[in-house]
Length: 460
Image 1: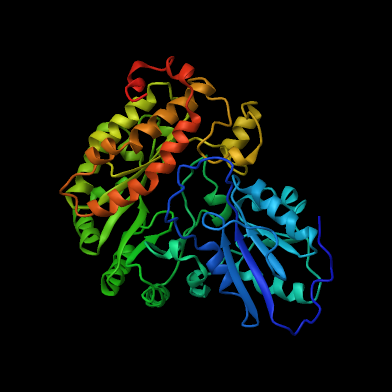
Image 2: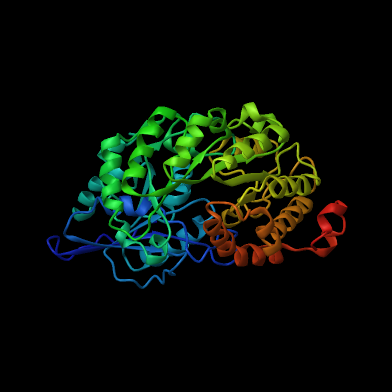
């Protein structure tokens, strides 16, 4: 579907561009926090627009798109779960004759579907394509497809236009990217498909320049959005020196291998590391422990956690329910592990077969995909037939675990009073408490709960 070609009355006049990150608001979401995480995608794209453009960013986590906004061109990026909302927004602007450029993960893996709701579709990394799109737009010759086959040189990236984000994005955290790509082989992850398996790095000088830029903002906390910041130890040590020099405290994605070197853990702590986001994924299935393969038992994981905590570094731990080896006992066991080890900020979700991943292909071949209503592909809802339990048991076990971990008593019991970052983790947990509890209640099915293992009924 395309809009009218009469986009510009005067190609020399000042132009307006609207960059949109959609959000599906029909259902509760587990990550619906008052202070949402600041995404880098749209601020990076915004920094490529020339001075004769007035650029606005609209993130529907904080402000709904009405479709009546004044603009000359619209750019929309979406995940799989937000694709239906992205399409609805796009259709509103197309109906007004305003061209819509659709990109992001979902458009990259399903460009033909996205093309039904866009003037142009962008696949892959879009930064180096933006100048060409704008030139074609001004010449009224937009192409139906722009393929981002070239992986971006990270040193060529300008500082992102974070000032265009709502204050709620910038109040608590500043995002920083120092690398892209992941060599891991997780079958449920689309990162290698989008960003490649080879890690591309940003030079220390480029990182320093961006830290100088970020120093203008109020927040003194960084979230390093790299898929695994600590994978290249020597490089991360160099960058940590920069974080310390600029006075930032910071968080990043990592794995349990950091605990194999206590000198490195001390360096992390000395540089201002508040917490590490670690994907535990599962307690028992080695096939899905690619990030922590040498810690393939709960006892080894617990020892690693104790070492990380010894240096005053907190943990944001990710766990996934629904692997073929999981049975209804997995919920009680995982919650007990989280509480006993004191993982400060748990992130639990349901295994989701996103299009473009090996997991999706496998489950579709086995005829286990229940439906393709993408709005439910949010990691909070079951969209496939699990092997070790029923669909209903997986959904209800997740609801119970979410409710348990979000309860004030659970939060207070796992965040130790001696924790150096206790205030941060209490704030983070309680900012999510309302959304997670609301989601758990919306998923609650008493009839199914009574059939679950006895241990999961203690807070029902």
